[in-house]
Image 1 (cartoon, rainbow, N blue to C red):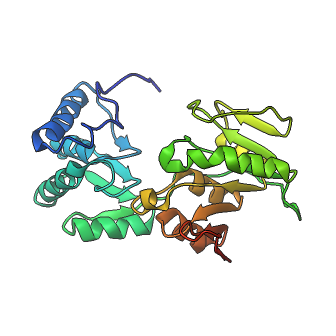
Image 2: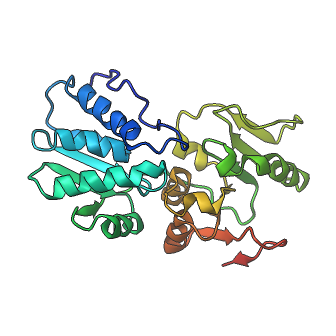
Length: 269
């Protein structure tokens, strides 16, 4: 395998939420389509996370290269112009022969895309999380984990308070802080802060439960890698209700759901 930089534009970039110009958003797809022309001849292009402007780029080469694209969120999530871009590309692909398979990593997202662009077939792809062997089956909880890229929509402001409360009750705590955004006000031997995780599932498997204090509104149109990996590894996860990750955790019977509207949490089995 050869690894090289393909795109001039960061795959997760956007023109900014304040920019509503279709031309600005279309430029992302055109630049990405041009970059793809430099890719060596291959049998398959795999898009692990396919954004709307990447679909537009893929459609430029839709008849010449076999492609598989997977989506983690609906077109409306990342940028206001994303939905319009996706709809235009979906209509183009539906009306011409192409060699692209578009799929989502859960049936909930698949149905959302079918409702949004019914002429483009969207298949259900296997979730790319395998988990790992989990030998911890304690009768009591000892170690609590916070994983993922900690940021405002992931409840980063709540983490210091939650960690302090857990430590005061005698729990061990693991916090992934790859971005360096978590404020640390105290040193305690029972808290372990990890800047980079080499083996994500193995680290998850060392916890008895994972807390995912995200804002549910942010994930009504999106999956979560942390929740998916927790399910695959067999580690219970606490998630806010009303979002797609909570519905998936409920399906597999491995989550505890909490609403964030009342003053006192309302717990559901």
